[in-house]
Image (cartoon, rainbow, N blue to C red; front, side, top):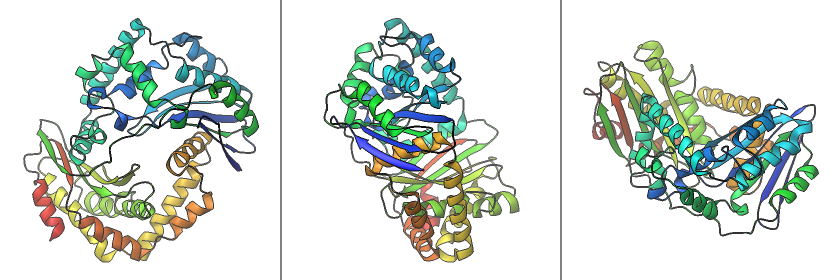
Length: 420
């Protein structure tokens, strides 16, 4: 397998990885324009724009966009995150030129027809309503808001319905003009692809774009806080976060291994102690999420109103205990899980294309897989214990609770327990 990275004169980066033996390819355009690039009055517009890309271009109607890919047996989709918007497709190798043509068309040539804006506005408002009926969606949005209050990184990706209800064509076009320059884009492809062909196609589709100033965003400040709502549900949804490392931080692999052994699988401490031994929950996990300049160590569980106090206290106790008695065997198991997850995932061209795009966006290069595996292998018990100690020494934490949470301890009480 071979990775190649090139750049057009206007700043667009093109990265490919050929995977011999495959008959299909995944490719897409990753744009460095997500929720955290929005002003407060724009909250939700990046996601709205993602939807509108499929609603018609200067060359294709919405139906023709879908038919162009599905007529050859492929699929096309998109997503918006807090730091990027991605438009991607999976097709057979003979249809790579078609897929790139469709993707470039929907990104560069949307018409934003007023009637389609109104239709899609209704769809997005329904999506917001569905999210508000989903407790675990709510609690993670609240956790993000509590961790990064009054910041773009703390706002929801979907945006509030009152903002979405007011977006007009000029708002969408303005966001594109500000954030969709070639320097903010990475074209990534993996599978049955030929780099030279992708380069020729990219030059034809994107070389006319003028270089523009790179979009910026405010530096994130993890401040912490608490948000809870007492509601008659079957379960309390509990989410606790501490600040973790950014993508490029030396501790990122340590944080991920720490999260894995703490709450990343059936053998993890949280699963064994709180679910298996005590039966206090069905779902419980820990994860280490990262952004360009910050990160979040998140712990989540759902439990009954009667058990929430015990569950919250035990979760904090397990978090503390890692710093004192983590074993080399636990670290070795977590390393194996992390390596296996990485390598198994990379058997998919879609996963490889996304990974390439993320790496280029973060480091402007693609570290060899061997380098990544070596960094995982370098994490030992001492490093995990030291990281766990720094984590529990954090002065800020965020807590979100939703459901019958009247017996849940306060954030202050949990922080005192963590520091004791």
